[in-house]
Length: 401
Image (cartoon, rainbow, N blue to C red):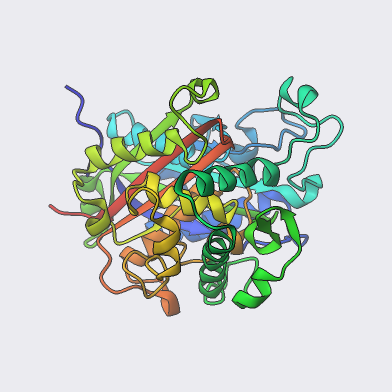
C-alpha cells in the first residue's frame, strides 16, 4: 500500500532571484540568478544533477512549450529535463516532479526550477481580445480575475452573515499584515509598509477588493535541488530539511453543478490539505503547523484558505485575521516573507519561492523576519477560477532520523 514520500526526500539547497520589474535581466538571467544560489547552497557540482523539472506557465517564445529554456540557460549536461505547467501550481508541480524522481529511486539528485518573465509580455491579469483560456473567454469576454474572486468574497459574507464593513476590514488586515512582512525581505518586489487607512481608502478594483487586496505582476525565479536523506548525510549535511508531503487536487468541474458547493471556499484546497496532512502524519494542523504561505492572489483568497487548510474554524477566518492569528507575531504566521502581495506572481516560480521561505525559516536563515523554532512549514497554491481550479499543498520540516 502506498505510504507517500514523507522523509524520503531531502532538500540539498535552494535559491531565489530578486523579484520585481526586472528590466535589467532576461528570463535566462533570472534562472541563473536563482540556480547559482541554489547550487552553492547544495554544495555540489552541476554535473551531479541527474534530472530536472522546469515550471513555466506562459513563456513559449522561440522554443515552444519545451524544456529547452532551462537546459540551455543553465547549460545542463544532456540530462532529462521535463517542462510542466499547471496554472498557478506550476512551481510546486516542478518541485513534485523532482521529489518523486528521487523518492522513486530513479535518480539520486534532481533539480526543480520555476521562472516567469511576465513584465516582458505586457500581462496585466485582465482579459483582452485574443486572450488565451479556451472558449470560455468567448462566452464571458469581460470576466476578470478580480471580478471572479470578488464573487468569492460575496459568497463567503452571505454564508456566514458577515457585515460588509467587517469583511472589508478583515480583508484589509490580510493585506496590511503581508506588506508589514515584506518590508523585511530584500528579495521582495514591494517593500513599503502601508497603513490600514491607506488600504481601506485605496481605489476599488472589484468590490470589496481594493487596490491593495490584489497582487501585482512581476518577474522572478526560484529553484530547489533535492536528494535522499542518506545522500544528504554522505555529502556532510547535518541539519537538513525533508519533504513531509506534496499533494495536488484538480477539479473535475463538479463545483460548477452547485449541488453542494456554495462558492465560498475552494474544494480542491480542502482536498489537497486533507491528503497532505495524512501523508505528513499531522492530525492537529492548527497546533502543529508553525507557519505557512498560501495563495494570496487576492486577500479574500487567503482569508477563505485559512479554513480550507483547517487553520481556522468554518466561518471564523475573518475573526482570526482581525485578531492577528496569522500576523508575524501571531499563533501561525502567514506570508512571513510578504507573500504574493509583495513578490507579485511570476506564475511558474511562486510555488518554489514559497518553499524557499519555509526552507530558510526552518534552517534559521531568515534574518530580520526569522521566527522562533518553527517545526513544520506549509505552502499552498491555487490556480484557475473559483469554480474550476487546481490546488497544491506541500509540507516541509526538519529531518527526524
